[in-house]
Image (cartoon, rainbow, N blue to C red; front, top):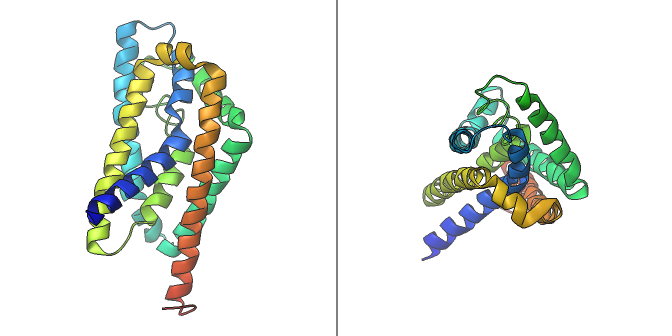
Length: 224
């Protein structure tokens, strides 16, 4: 039973962190504007491909990003501390002024209007949906993976499921973007974004604390 609890906790941790920075509902508002001139079938196809590409980006950052950084001599402890700080800073920016974050996405969306017809990956997936902020959060989460075999397995399954679930949420949000816009409106989307940003801030602080704690333990400082 405890293994399933750990699995659920890890899933919620990864999903909430990534959801906070991706904000599918906010992205759906922009997606609705960008693809307004396209047919319903074209928009549905774009939403499907964006969901697939987003899953690939998040899973790649979760499982490969940390090894790429390690190749350049960056330790896991340093990555956890830096990654946690990056997550916290991103969260603070979102919490203080989520409109700025969405305005940045809007500028990328404006480029999509004049881009070639196939814009599913660039710029609609990167950087509009899963940009540098999402990648840095995913790498930080991947660096926070446990080393104990059973806990590592739980984290692997949970984080993979969380990334896939978020990709599914992106697809649904974009697929039904017009409905979301009509139901929520801009003000309610911003309220959800602020609540998610506060949760992301707490997660970033926790990742940083874990990094500092492990670094001190590896250096022989503190309790064993």
